[in-house]
Structure formats: C-alpha cells, structure tokens
Image (cartoon, rainbow, N blue to C red; front, side, top):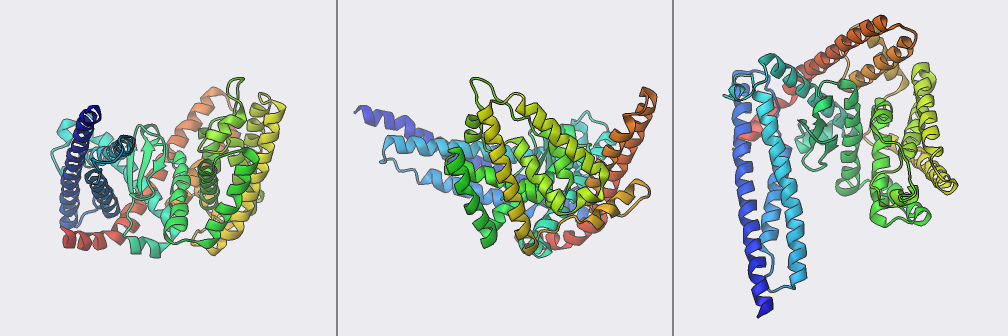
Length: 458
C-alpha cells in the first residue's frame, strides 16, 4: 500500500513532464514561424536579412524535443521506482537544456531585428538604434567567421549536403557550441572584441571531431582517439569517459590552431592557470576535469605553429609564444610538488605526441591549414586594406595587438593612449570587413537555397 501511494506523485510527475515538453514544442514551432516571417520579409524585398534562416537549428531542436516527448510517454508505471526516478532526472536535465536553447533563440531574434523596422521590437528596448546597428554588425561578422571556419574544416560539400547556415547568440555564458544544432554562443563582453572570436575555431573544431567520429566515421581520427585514450587511463588513472573528453578538447585545440593560429594567442588570455593546493592536488584535478591542464594544451598548440612554419616566419609571434609558455611554466611549477611536476611533464609530452600524430592525419581530411603564405598575406592588412576572409581577419586583429604590445612597452602614457585609439578604429574596420564578407559572399550565396527550402517546408 505504501509503495502504491508513492507511485502516485511519481506518475503525476511523468504527466507534468509530458505537459512541459509539449509546451516547449509548441513554443519552438511559434518561434520558428516568427523567424521565417522576418526572413521571408527581407527575401521578398530582395534585401540582405539580419540573419539567415537557421534550418539546421530548428530541425535539430524539433528532433530533440520529439525524442524527449517519446521518452516521457514511454516511462513505465510498473517499472522499479529507482528506474523511474533516474529517468525523470535525465528528462529534467534534457528539458532544462532544451529550454536554454529556445530562450537563446528568442533572445537572439529580438536582438537581431530591434531597430530594423521588421517588427515592433525596437520600442521595447532602451538601446539606441545606433547601438542596435552595431550589434547587428557584430552578429553578422561572427556569423561570417563561423561559416568560413566550418567551410575550412568540413568543406563546401558538407555545407551544401547539410544545408548549414551560421547562427550565433550573444549571452552570459562562455564560448560554446552545440555540435548538433550548431548554435554558437559568444559572451556579451566579447561581442565587439573581434580578436577573441578566434576561440570559435576551437569550438567549431568540436563539430569536426563529432562529425569525424559519429557521422562520417573517419577511421584515422577514431584510431588516434583510441590510441591515446589508453595512455591517459593507464598513466593518470582516469576513467575512460574523462580521458575521451580530454582528448576531444586536445584535438579541438590542435585543429583550431591548425586552421586559425590566433587560437593559441587567445588561449593564453582566456585559459586558467593550472594550480594546486594541499586539499586539491593537481593529479586529482586532472582525473576529474573535462579539460587537460592549460600548459599541456598550449604545448600541443605550439607544435602546430611549429609544424606549419609560422614561428619561423613571424618573429613577433615567436616571441609571444615563447614568453607565454615561460610564464605558464614559471607560474605553475613554483606551486607544484615534485610529484605534480612529474605529472605535468608526462602529460605535456603526451600532448605534444598527440599534436604531432594529428598533424600527420589532418592533410588527408577536409581541414585547410593556415600556411605561412596565408599568414604573410594576412600581415599585409596592417598596411593596406585587403579583402580577407573572416578567419584571416581575426588573426590580423591579434597581429595588430601583438605589434602594439611590443611597440607600446617603450611609449609614455599619452603615446600609449593614442595607440589604443588607433587600434580601436582598426578593430572596428575588421568587423566592418567581416560584415561585408557576410552580405556579399555568404548571404547572397545561400539565401536563395534556404528560401526555396523553407517555402517547401512551410
């Protein structure tokens, strides 16, 4: 009798899940219609839309939502109580993740169309139309970078086959991307700092790894993951899942740097120091973390820069890489016990070996590296306006920053302030160039195909 009474609220919870997920599916469909109405308005006028209709995003989220609803409907009232409670926990976790994605879509729509006159949204925001125009410019510049990076990693054929279009969201979270829906998240504080967008190369490299291991089943990539998982499990006493996640992060660092060398420079600013304390030894942190230690990640990325010949072609980049690694080494090793130093050195050597092995495989894939000639051409953007792809532009932003760091160290405060003003204008020009790339080379290239597709599905 007691067990039966307990089942009543548990099964009532199942009904609540079904109702909540059905509501999310309805919300998603309404949001999809709103996106389509704005996009079709611009398409019918022959104007460049503030966004490209995100077909992949909606397909992925609708499939996810339908799968959640099926799982909620299939909860067996006669199953063991602990099994039902466990399934409810997984449903709650996935429902929360779906709600977060829908919230981002809704917020992004408001941000992108406010001030454009497409809908009566501008009146609900206190932001000026000038600021809204700048925001739209940044959105389109980030979208251009995402598209360019995906094309350099997965190729044009993959883009056509999957009907991929870039879709970015500025929010409070750190850089991340869903490898299924392709929603790219950038923190608000970096919305106008183009040089930090280089982290997108790391995030989109996760998509390449996902596609290589789950979809296209690239044997060479899968073999490398298996080959290096075992040493992590054996030498550092990790469980298999943690080792696999850390290798995936390391692969994404390497591939991101291979395509966009500025990934290394951005990582030296964004990644945390690897430290330890008496109650939290380094080895225990490594064993439970989803990411390798920062020192090891930077060492792996440096191998890429050396392999591509960029360190020998650019003394400014070479000096910065050398100084950064010395800083991290000195900062970390002074606080590490001898045993932890040994762990760090062993992991660093393994990370370098992973990088060298992956560099042998990547030329046989769709991934396009940034060569020394590409880097030298990018450098010319310091002296004259060039029509560069967005990936080159974010590297140019860091080239400018590194040049300023070297030069400004010998300047007084007034000269330093003037230098920063000129750099701000330079970065604004980079965003303008990326937006121009979006309107002239991406929107015009894919809009027609998306328009035809959505007419058929509406």
